[in-house]
Amino acid sequence: MIENKHKPDKLTGVKGMNDILPCDVGLWRFLENAIKSILHAYGYRNIRTPILEYTSLFRRSIGEVTDIVTKEMYSFVDSLNGQQLTMRPENTAAVVRAAIEHNLLYDGPKRLWYIGPMFRHERPQRGRYRQFHQVGVEALGFAGPDVDAEIILMCQRLWSDLGLTGIRLELNSLGHKHERAAHRDQLITYLEKYIELLDNDSKHRLYTNPLRVLDTKNPALQDIAANAPKIIDFLGEESLGHFKGVQSLLSANNVSFTINPRLVRGLDYYNMTVFEWVTDRLGAQGSVGGGGRYDPLIKQLGGKPALACGWALGIERILELLREDNPVPSDDGCDVYIVYQGDVAHSRAFVMAEQLRDTGLDVVLHCSTDNTSVSLRSQMRFADVSGAMYAVIIGDDEVRQDEVSIKLLRSDRTITNADRIQQRVPTKCLAEFLTNLIAAKTKKY
Ligand code: ATP
Ligand code: MG
Image (cartoon, rainbow, N blue to C red; front, side, top):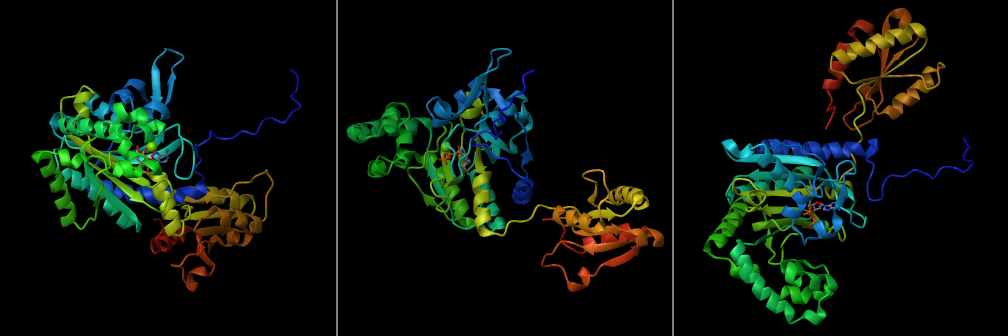
């Protein structure tokens, strides 16, 4: 074999797809825990669907002329069987597909949630990645407007539990299909008057998806979009009643909102209530999350007709806000790091580590990096960077006395000077001693 004298190319991750390193995981877990406790508080149940789905699922749900389907999907042909597959760009379609496939609504409506990676081929920038994460809820089989308000309240509770400010709620109603059709006709007539001024994207959407022209981010088109016919003026009594119902439930629960008549959402399956959480704190990526009703979707995908609504929030964008607002919680290190000197201490430490784990403590036992024994002092440096709360030290003297020394490693505000003193305890009392010490502190967030 010819040896390659050239240095191999440096390996990197795929553009727009991020590694989440151990030092970042503390904040992720903090957010995930906050989210999960709210989802449980409202009785939502977790559902986990695959990353890959047949491409047709997204074409039939999200819509053929949406940005996601026309230019953002990671789609490919399975070389083994020629099937067209897509890495999920969002998860509502898959949850609905799974609910239909497994007949989940057979005994009544369902409140579901998911969390996980989504994939869109976009230009990577702050808050916009090619692999990103969403948490979402889908309330399947409910007519609203109470459920519409419920899912909005869940987000509001999340912002308040996380201490996040500067996130506004925008609300609109897209009404029923026939109401959108009447609005669409007038909207096209209106936009045709300005056809010369429209950008290419908007010209493209004029006859395929004119509602999306209202959503344009092009500053030059803001006036045209602002003065366009508003969908709300086309809503009949029932749609208006539903929309008012959502608003009054939100007001009764002190949720502030503004009505944005141009809010249309980028996916085709929405109807009636739509909403978006927006912030000015993330530059161009102002949308933290959004959702609404998608009553026609279950039927459209072949299920027994049932009404539905949901939302999806972007985890990376929430994390960005959290990082700005709060000191980053450290990754949660172990309770105990055990260091030792000599062979007798080593085997004693090994057994001790297992016994401590039996009692429920999280324990790291020092292991050699190169098969030579290192001093207690150097082992303590490993203990320090491990993030463990306590070091348990077994030196020669401890072996002779059948004792161990315990040293506090982490510094945080809950720690008193008395805690800092290194203590010696008989080996047999170690587990109880440590458990009491750790129970007295708020160990994990
Ligand atoms: P945007 O207008 O920013 O492209 P969107 O309307 O495409 O957002 P949705 O499809 O409604 O977004 O997805 C819900 C949430 O998922 C967004 O509000 C955002 O927080 C997050 N999100 C969407 N696309 C990305 C991405 N490429 N990178 C990171 N987060 C994203
Ligand atoms: Mg987008």
